Image 1 (cartoon, rainbow, N blue to C red):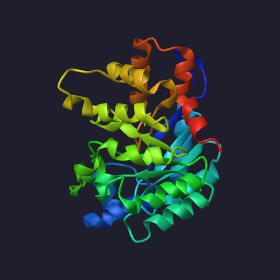
Image 2: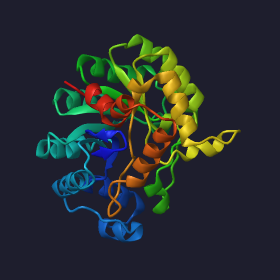
Image 3: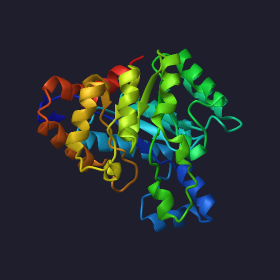
Image 4: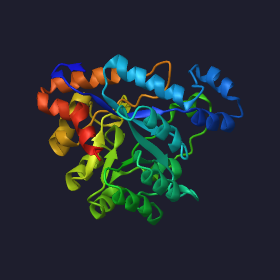
Length: 303
């Protein structure tokens, strides 16, 4: 992709794969048909996982993206992303949401990572109401450690799920389990496992920086509109956030992400443009821009 720093491979570390199974789960919870769910949301619901994989591949082609990490966005849907990866192994990397406290949660993690396609285990402690330090979660970290090239993505901070809000579904999350510092002892104990905190910690920016400073195996993804900045006592900009993250974590541990998800919007190009403008404003070097916008993800997920 042509950028202000030259033409190089840009990779997106954060795209949600809203598969037919994802929408079927929501529709059942809301008491609607899948078709009614699509009309309520005013979104396009794919007829199949293959159709959705082709749509995302076309988005990558249109915008000049090299690769993207696709996230299966409900527990148990890892096969949808695995199938997309089989279709386009050179364009996608596979992440999946896991709930380690579910009866089959740990088993599903072990099976997915052993399959060789999936690399990112996505944990949402506030959503599923457990601490990252809970002993029930330990097998997830052990499994990631046993499969080099795997990462553990942990959503911290404020958690809102727009699709649930649009459908009038409750989100009974518990922010007591949202603090990135819950990962401190875990990241120290598993130094060969790389952890990713999305959205700069989504409101726990200071704590995320502290964790990065103490644990060299913790990365930050830059995705979404980062509206959490309005919670801070002083006015702060995306430029300020990126500057401070670079100061503490360094350019080698920042991963560009868009948090794209639904169609017909597709890839959230505005998020990319805003981050490019902020990086330009702090006069980042071409070398560091290449790392943040793609090189770090490639290196992190290299087998």
